[in-house]
Length: 142
Image (cartoon, rainbow, N blue to C red; front, side):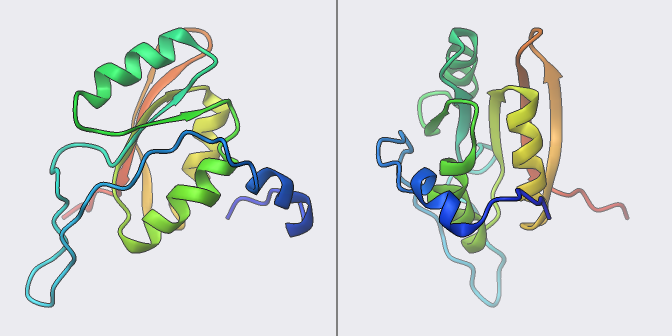
């Protein structure tokens, strides 16, 4: 697990930030004993994360998301996204996400995704500052 090196008390001001633009969860079909979980919108990411500091990130995220997938904005730091959104969503059901962010933001999300059994499934350099990526379930080799 990623060791941040900050105590819980040091994180409280970061976690308490209330203006973070994270959209509501999509509806989902709960798992039942006789069938596995099926996401409400198959083949689409749960959310598309973008770094709002870069106009190219905003534009590419809109393309990736299409009309129905929620967008989630960050400003380089994934702490609030993790504590307010992904941690709880991935405990319920570790769904795929996509994004256009810096390599540093992707690195942090990649480390956090490991605990949910997820990994980076696609990584593409967009320009000197940005990567387009997907995080999803590990593929099983038969």
